[in-house]
Amino acid sequence: MLRGTLASVPLLLAVLAERPTAGVPAALGAMLAGINDRPGGRRAAVTRLGVPALAGAAGLLFGSMIAAAAGGGRSVVALPLVFGVLGLVAGAFSSTGPVASACGTQVLVAAVIGAGMPLPEPGPLRALLFLAGASWLLLLRLVLPSPGRPGSGPYRLDGEREAVAAVYEAVSTLLRATGGPQALAGRAALSAALDRAQDALGGPRLRGRASSSAEHRLHARYAAAFPLAEAATALAWAGVPLPARLVEGPRRLSDAVRTGGPCGPLPAPARTDAGLRALDDALLRAAAVFDRPEGAPSSTAKGHPGGSVPRRAWSAAGREYGLRVAVCCATSTVVAQWLHHDHWYWLPATTVFLVKPDLGPLLSRVLCRAVGTVAGAAVFGLLMLLMSGLPAGPFPLVGAVALCGGLLPVATRHFAVQTAVVTVLVLSLVLLGGEPPAAWGRVVESLLACVTVLLVGHLPLPGRRGHTVRAALDTAVGAAHRYLRHVLEAPEDQAGRGALRRDAYRSLAAARTAIDLSAAELPSVARHSAGSDGVASAVERLVDTTTACAVQLGNRADELPPSHAERLSVHLSELDRAWAVPRREMSVL
Image (cartoon, rainbow, N blue to C red; front, top):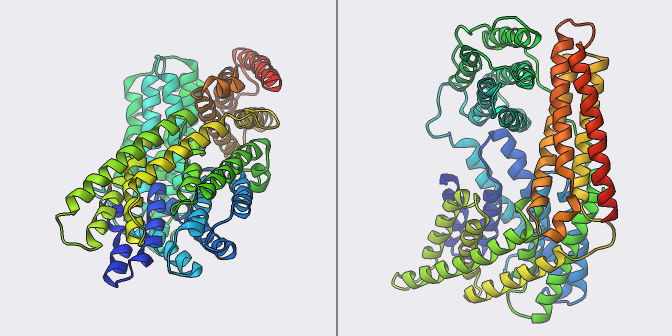
């Protein structure tokens, strides 16, 4: 919230320099970067905020050039065609990951604003100002220390330390839940914690000798959590309740990561079976890593393996999403140009946000957008009424922008609240840009965008539906089979096994997310992913069993115990049967 409030400084400087219109692109860049600003590591924020900002600056420049070529940004044919093609490319690229999704959104929104918003600054200057606003927020993200930070060490690693500590905490929680009804949820929480830590540690390396030493130490502590997570998963799979003292070891490791201090003595489990022996070995190795002196060489965890971004963008799922974005952008631009009003760019810019599937089910986000826009316009009207008693000038509007910037991190928790805050912020920037008040027009444009996206989102386009869920399941099934094959063929390769296990669980989590999102859609959309939840459950059982087999084979066993081999065979047959049904149903639908 502090960063969001301070993000309005470039706008304030532009107002003080009597160039308020120059502050509008900077405020827009800071606003969009603020939407992408999330808790986590500072290094990951460089990519999460910086790359979309570059895309947005390029989009603003492109839109300004299109406006100049079209003559004031007016064309019922050329603009819809251009934005349709741009929407197709940006939408397909958006389907490849969260950062790509933010890039696709910003390049489209900025291009539409650049083509329609009448600012006196030339296109290159607008792009630089947009980038300056986003860079200012990124700078705040990198230099401001976290409040109430525990322990010692470089504050630039606060988010990374917390993410790694959460992994050990999740191991402790899973061990506590083993043998009870919460074991499956605990395993899912552990997988999510590993994903977050992997993302937090995956940004560009920091510079400086002290930071590098602390960073290497943190990477080693994250890598030491992998064997613990594997052993805890195998014990949870066995389903036998564990002594309460076993929870203390990972919990102390979690505290040591947070404070930077020693972990102290760790309670050793009784080495009565393969899972407990693996847990004991993992605790011993973790203790050795935590006691390693500063600057000692350490291993680094491997990143999440991913395929080629262009290939994933032009997959069936990418083409399906890109086509819907293209149709939404082109249709909304045609309607906006036909209405021929001053703020025509609001309509296509709104549809870009609404058509994004990672913001929730389509009907839900459309309703939230409508309610949030009406609420935001009402709040803006009330603010204008209150400001009427203040001295005239741009500073009350700058204060409104600063207030909205501070509220934005909290507002992102719910799409309707975020819409309300963004509405107040945008309406304030419109007045600062020299345009007339347009609260009622903002409501009308948003409602038109809601209708457009709702119709296009359920429009039967060429080809089959459900590509996103099917592609996520294909990825999860393939990752599970690769993991199993590696465990059976090379059980001694712990590093390779760890990377494949991460890939399997991460792909499974992505498939679960896609399935849950599809299931929450209207029946006309949800029916295209019928039966997919059974596939995800079968994959989950197979991956958990594979982890238990890995622990057995890693315990110097020459072959799998009959019970493990039988369970493995059963789960493979279940997956084959489960995957055959939804593939057939999706083909028919």
